[in-house]
Length: 486
Ligand SMILES: *Cc1c(COP(=O)(O)O)cnc(C)c1O
Image (cartoon, protein in one colour):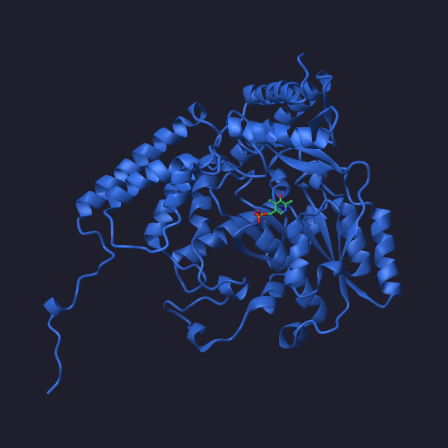
């Protein structure tokens, strides 16, 4: 006698909506509300701190029962939406973050609806990503043999480049037995992003193997110091393998002399990676492109679509001139991932062969929507706009006797401070108050050891009025906090 299970005895799928019409109605409401929110951003504050009740709402130790999607959406409206990061708002100028193109949000919904796993196999998600890689290749003047894919961000993309350079330097042995006592060393400027340091740590090479080369007065890597450091390491029996150039430093927007770095890398036989997290998108602007000369000679470029590209988070990208280097770094044989000449397991090189992830979502769809709907023209326009705003801000700072600019501002990031006794603490307090105030929100950094107010202009919604409000608020708060009645 065999057990038989009648269809009625099999429980229904608990994940599908109980009521599909209610699902449809809720979706429409969500899109309506989102549209209103995006249109009305400037009426609200940049950011608001979460009150205790909101924090407590996210500290429930036990998940209990189920709620209707409508009830959860009500919670979203009261507990989530008002307390978002703030980077959509025109007054946001803290950190290097994009504001997000609204069309990208709709595309994200579609991508989630398709629920494609873009680690591999033969489906349109992989083809879409290939399309973006093709465009990227063309933008940077990379050859047909290059390969690239989406990552979470430039941090992961930089990590990938360090690994590819490492595998190239040490060969397959690096994967078989690890880095052992290989004495690899790499070079980046002191203005390099902290994630480059971390990538060296994570690659097992150690952060001390990354030589942080001094910068010139213009905050670009000092080339003499770079050459000297390489020579010194060679003389000590170490193996230089990688130069990381920065195209758009987070603090002042400096762009290393990429052509010179490419020359040095070539003559020394080193891998040249460029961290172009936001700066590489500058190839779309006539005003930035000339300063990126040499980018097309890099062995790899890391950049983000989610900064100047305004694709909603997250959308980083790594492209490597010789795509085989990525395959050498990542591809692993596995029975369950074997390839077939046709069917769903077709395709020679899958994304999982050139990156660290197997399961991965479809970042390409939102990027495809944003790029096609807005065009590189929009990227160019918003870059130029942010350059203009930075110039305007620098002029306002210059005109204000109580303010001082710190570092150069020849791209879209301006650092400055309110002058006065105990200026470090004073400027910290000014920025904290501005963020809590909600009209304009810069962030803090240090330039030459001094605490600086940093205005990073990436949001295409930011206008001249926001720049003026920033300077006004700093002057006002600075005067108040310094106890200056004037
Ligand atoms: C933003 C940024 C990073 C980090 O990129 P994520 O996308 O945040 O991971 C690295 N380098 C530079 C120059 C950046 O601006």
